[in-house]
Amino acid sequence: MLGSWIAKAAPLACRWAVVIFGLALTAPAASAAPLNAQDTQIAQRWAANNAMFVLYHEMAHLLVDQLNLPVLGREEDAADNMATHILLSQRTNEADQALVDAARGWLLTDAAGPETFQTSDFYDSHSLNLQRAYAIVCMMVGSDRNAFGRIADVYGIDPFRQDSCAGDFNLIDRSVDRVMAAYGAPDTRDGGVKVHYEVATGLMSRAAVAFKRSGVFEKVADTLDKDYRLRRSVVLRAQLCDQPNAFYDPNHDEIIFCYELMHEFLDMARQDMAYIRVNAPETSKKVNKKARHSP
Ligand SMILES: [Zn+2]
Image (cartoon, rainbow, N blue to C red; front, side, top):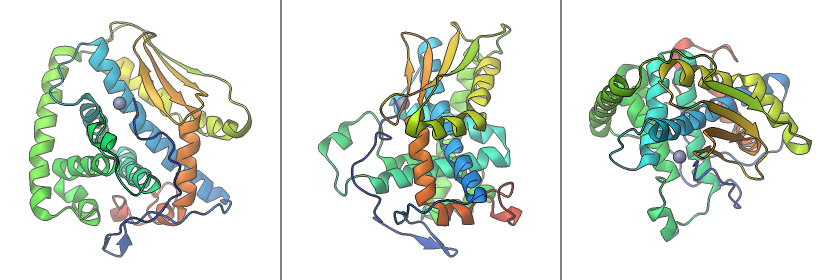
């Protein structure tokens, strides 16, 4: 399950701020201003990147179940680690940006939540939203200090921890390699993974169109089909759920992505546009290539 992406009642509020290199790591002020065409494209890309991280997370749950993978530790943390590892392994600007955007997404989710913690936050199967953001950034800087040191600085991770993040990443990297060697031989079957989009109407129709156009579902399906030896056919299904969520359904071998979650990501991007615009990838906006890792 996605956990803390369930809609929060409280409005976005700035809970903390870190300023390094002139970038403020702050939550946005709420804004309902309409976006122009370029900003709409930027928002859709940001939302799609967050959807991609979510789907790789759910893919990890599916693999744990179907392939009976060993998991030492909490499965929700392991699923986040696997999603991060998959994207880091792609070594593309797009995958790097997806991780930057996913970390920012968890930060914004935290900012949108209640000001105080409940006991249930600490016994939940998911780590806290901010921990999930920092875990992504830690793995990034742990994998490549030169490429991601700046974003770790922006997140305020001190140099000592940045050093030890390398150990965290190496342990996960070694573990994934061992698991893949045992379970990850490419599948030779065709059609093991199918993508299905259900119809969305009303308020969610725009989110449904944006999700389908992003091609994220097909990208994740391709990864799942080519890189893993699935034991049963899988369906990736996008649908209305009455809540912003995504989950793996082990009874039907389906990964469900809710259009409401895409809608929520688009809303988050709209409210965070001033920040996202500055750090948008160069394909959306002409920026210095060296700045592509800024959050
Ligand atoms: Zn999960």
